[in-house]
Length: 274
Image 1 (cartoon, helix red, strand yellow):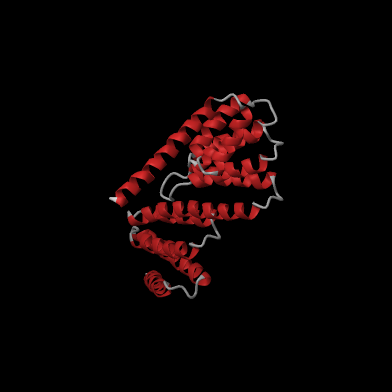
Image 2 (cartoon, helix red, strand yellow; image 1 turned 120 degrees about the vertical axis):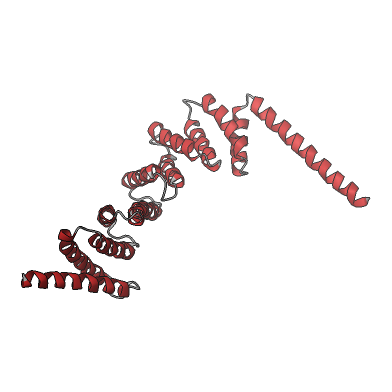
């Protein structure tokens, strides 16, 4: 009985506080006191009550337009969108901020946050990478505009991560061609990976898959094209083994090389006998 009454009392206090809080917030929304709205908007923001903060900043944005408070209110508007995970809206707001308030003390932070929102919107590698490219472009622009920013190293880290995602997207396309048995397209896609992302951490895997694609392309070629394509397989083996002599795939690579070499040698002997 005592416990039940105690719980009832606690719930009553919570409800009373909630009603009081809502009532107070409603009064602030209806108030004509700009200073009160501004201070409470910042307080709600600092308390992570972003929905309430956003409504107050939205009201303030029309009230303080053209005044010295305009840039700070606009910046906080964008930050509330960001903290509510609405990265598309936030990125647009940060972009507009930089265009309108380029000389504001918040301009550098706004420019970085725009790029960061695009970074947060970057999807999984298998999906369309428009947002990833946009993030890289915006991060690079930030680094040009603010070369002395303390955020430069973070920008470089994010660009590297995003480029690896683009590389993985490209590799997945090559992998699809390979799995479908379209080895010619696989070779083209893998070479594109290496051309676009020569320093990728997946370089060994790409070179080995390129070797296998060359080999299987030769096997499935018409007889008159096989000698040429087996020779290309041998050349690919030398490229792979020169870079990764200790690769865990070395044994399989050597088997491919032996088979390709035997075919080329047998073909050469047949030509000599003729």
